[in-house]
Image 1 (cartoon, rainbow, N blue to C red):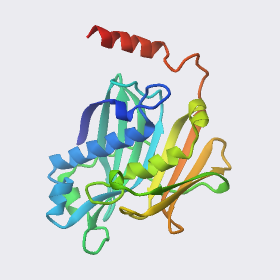
Image 2: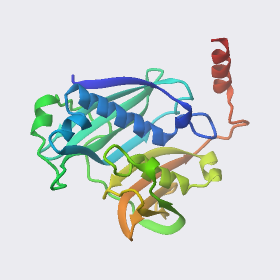
Image 3: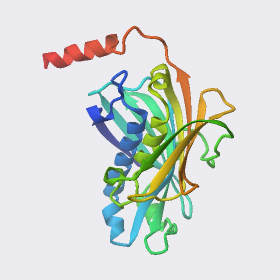
Image 4: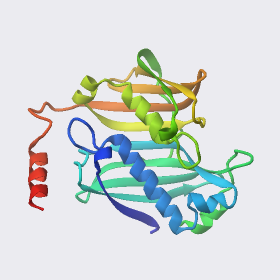
Length: 266
């Protein structure tokens, strides 16, 4: 079975501000890093594709959080594999684990892009080098459908800067999700936890581009649509679903206190 596995530790930059747990957005960055490493084992990393005037892009991410997220400094595991290959599309499925139990699972849609034409290239080489593992974490791969929007609840403006760029000199996927997250105020995030995240990347943006991220309510309770636009055109659509947190006396709960005491003994 052709799966790639990698261990990581939750570092300070990837921790939330309220409960010292992994930020959901950071889970996606671990997934992208694991996929890049997987590709490197098949000689299909970004630097390998540069030599053939091609590059990887991800156009969709779907992730469900199925249990509590791990604390700062804890070790997590990422298991990722190619689950479907068509003439132009490459799907990965994945799970993230903590204490050997899944806390997140999902899938992503990837393409290899020709630098000159900016169009998807055929997947023949991928099919030759990767073994397909038909294990689907969220069921059949389906087309991204954005929920119907109702009234706008917030908006944020952003000018792309150097910290937003990836190695292709495009704006990093994480930056779009950051914008969506920033439209939720601290009071909302203290009382809610993210249960699922669906993302569709529509267009590339670059250094200096002005973006507007608008958040809308939908017909489903605690489900929101976030639309990131450049010049009035959507460059990224995001759907988030939240659930209410249980009330706690302190953000530093018993489990974190135990962890802190263990670290002091090291």
